Image (cartoon, rainbow, N blue to C red; front, side, top):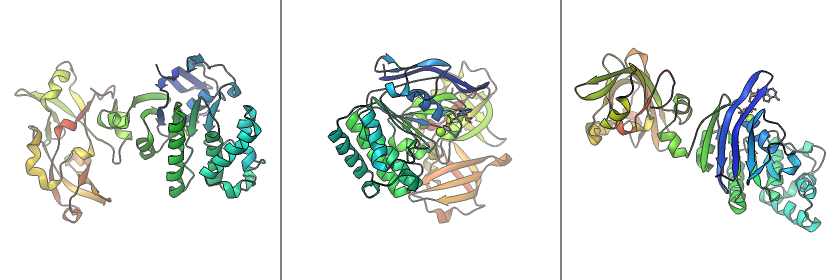
Length: 372
Ligand code: ADP
Ligand code: MG
């Protein structure tokens, strides 16, 4: 049982379903990230958790107490909104102090906490300024300081650092994590930035189209995406998704992608596929499953050799790796991430033959788009 239990939340605006049966639990001290594209329903979930929006159905349980119908002020939540939710004509001190006074912290405790939080977020020089005279980034830091100053039962963050410049963002992220660890409360953190999600989460829930697509650790989501959406959403570049014909030939399964490209599936798929009676599958190949071109002769490392031939279309050198897009027959494109190769050898238009680590394959049902 998690400390925060979110059960079957459903929400409509007019006749548009914005949340459809969303359930998850967050443990005490867990940093739980809601990740997904804009418009997916992330902010609506957070608003329901803190009580400024009500669910049509479902419930929110915090530490065993049903707070679904509690007023926002009765929930003791530390929250940073996407639009900050500050009092524009109060100054920084008053904004940070407001929630503490509302919860009857003693006066000297309020002063101390305001000072500490302001200092931690670099707001000390701005402490007497009114909010309307601050930049967007500064306002965001005030909102963070306000949430961090109090001892809440849970913390909710809605894209709290998206307006900060990269240096402050890294600092604010450390501050959020530091406080989270000190307070050991459930934290729900919304972002549309997968790098941020992968970097700071204990677990991630992928939300899209009002539905919870998958919950898991970053590693679980990357290795075993539950469906085509998650596979195509995560990673830069994302997993290659190649529709093909499923064949069983001389004791082994193959996916025929094009006339000349037939990929052998390792025996670990036999059990799953013997009950799968459809003619087609979608083969998922993570970009990192491709072996660098110069180790192509060792492609049978894992017993099932697979080679893919194509033409180099695009090369993007990054700090320690190279992202290469290459074109197969029939205008299929696949992306590969190679570690430690000399990208000057990968000329545009040149032919490329690379091996693939078959153990990293994923398969999806093309009708349901669910993983097999
Ligand atoms: P996210 O935070 O993932 O970007 P939101 O929860 O803000 O998504 O929005 C989900 C959907 O609900 C969007 O299509 C948005 O336009 C719609 N929506 C949000 N709030 C309201 C509202 N008060 N009235 C009508 N539609 C809304
Ligand atoms: Mg939002």
